[in-house]
Amino acid sequence: MKISCYLLMGVVLLAGCQSSGEPQPSESCPGYAEAGSTKALAARKVSYIDRPDVRVVEMRCVSRADLLRIDIDLKNRRSKEQHIAYRFDWFEANGMSTGSEEAWKPLVLYPGVPRTIRTVSPSTDAKDFRLLIKR
Amino acid sequence: MKIRSIRSACLIMVIMAAALAGGCSKQVRYGDAKAVETVNLDFGSTDLQLIAESMTRSLLQAPVVANGSRPIVTVQDVKNKTSEYIDTRAITDSIRAELVKSGRVRFAVDEVAMEEQISELERQQSEYYDAEQTAEIGRMVGAAYRLQGSILSIVKQNEDVKDVYYKFNLQLWNVQNGLLEWSDEKDIRKTES
Image 1: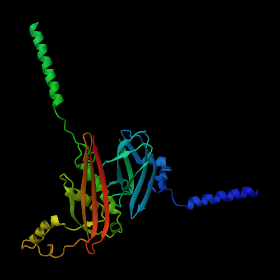
Image 2: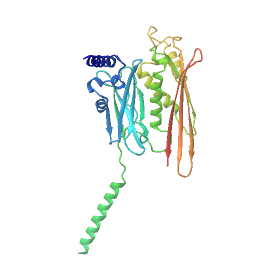
Image 3: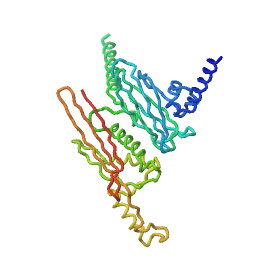
Image 4: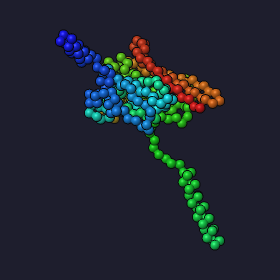
């Protein structure tokens, strides 16, 4: 009886720690609440053109000075070097696109090494994003 | 029989000529202005766009801009230290356009546009304008900060490979006290083999 009480208290304490702790990086990204997981969020936020053999490993978002800073970790799924290009599209809170169309940015991915792409929103109006990756 | 064979020979020639003409004609179509351009190693549209975007996003995070005070900035020269012709004005124009769109920076008339600004001011002082609506002389606002930069390139090549490395550097200086408030760089490497 004593042991089960201690176990219960431990579980309650752990749950309390989790809920009051810092949010996980992906949780700060717009749309995470609807998606529920990093994988589901990536499926919503990332579009692939010409089937690049890459995978989004992690997404991190931080709002600083009303600008959205984003880090996205990509992993090359091939055993050799891969050349891709990427760009972000930006949207206001109401879903309207904002900012100029970004340039496609070339990126080299080495096998087995994650690569982080970093960006910051072009204006304070930009509250949401979409990442496009193409081979 | 002879006439028939001549006719069919002529027909074949006409078809071949048409096919050749079709094959030689160049097709014109619109492309993606933001696509990665790799026609040759020279400084190109992708380099310009990458530099402008990288510098703009970095500058937006600089404390003097991020604090929301909408500082007044003027654009000075970007020195071209490369061996090729690069319109550095196009780079600073793109940076300025993006910063203006962000709403976080205001720009004062720069040295290049000063002549036109003064000319317009003086023109408005003539008797043809409504005195109550003309711009007054002596009301222009000076910039608190100035943007200046440089671009250099390192080119190396052997029989098989040519490598070009560009380094773009941009700095934001405080006009009043001469302090460097922000600086960033963008590297670009291109290889042809």
